[in-house]
Length: 324
Image 1 (cartoon, helix red, strand yellow):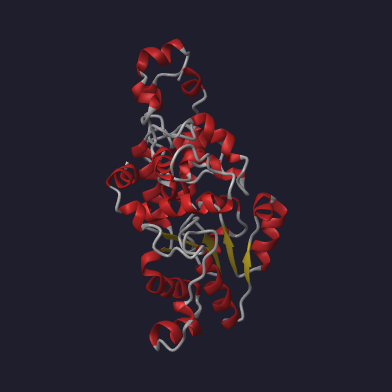
Image 2: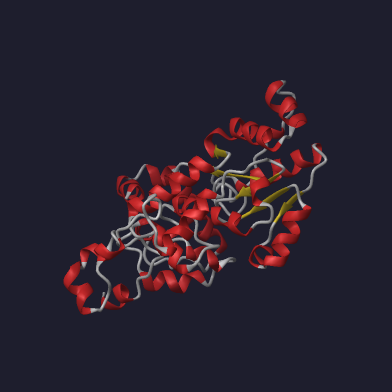
């Protein structure tokens, strides 16, 4: 227990789980800073420390002046495979270039800048802080898609089961899911160890391994990958602070789509990107089948189990764990 607590860092919010449960006396014994010292708000207009100011730059730079180019911030398990396929074809219709960045390109600044300059629309599995290190960011309309968080968490678990080696299946699948989605049961030591199995280990900067299954969309909207460790910590000084930062980003983004309303949301995206032909054909005259396209991989549905989520949502214990 002490080892788990001592290794905690700002990749988890400080006012949840063990940080509160263990109490002030234990924090003092371990030489940890007082919890009250960290309860400032990165998204408060009164915050003046350097870490909070850097964190606030994330949402301050999300609203573009013009929509000359686009950036699709792909949050995992929000129909991203379908969206990339649709956006790629829509770009061809508009005689625009669509590029899907690999993780290697995303991590290499020169490759990222080269692709961002040469492509009209870029798709990247990153977070909103990417705009801080994006060329001509004030001319880029960034957008993302959100999904019902319970469905997304279940899909994430199924995804990691399908690729193998990432989830330590101790006991039955029911116990595994409860442990992964619970802030109090998903241990720090496992989280650190499991990150190395990801295709892009940097994902753990936003909430760690356990954060992939717990409020991951909030972590992406708050930003983590392209800011300093201090700025990541400033956003995650409390659960309320993290939510506040995510809401600021939501308000600043030109378009936010919903997976459950995929077609309607895509029409908003086409309009924002200036894809006038596609918008007219698909959204006004409704004479194209593009919006009906659905593709998936590494999911329960891809393995022929289209109703896999029903087994989770029909179980009261699992449903309660997901809500937690």
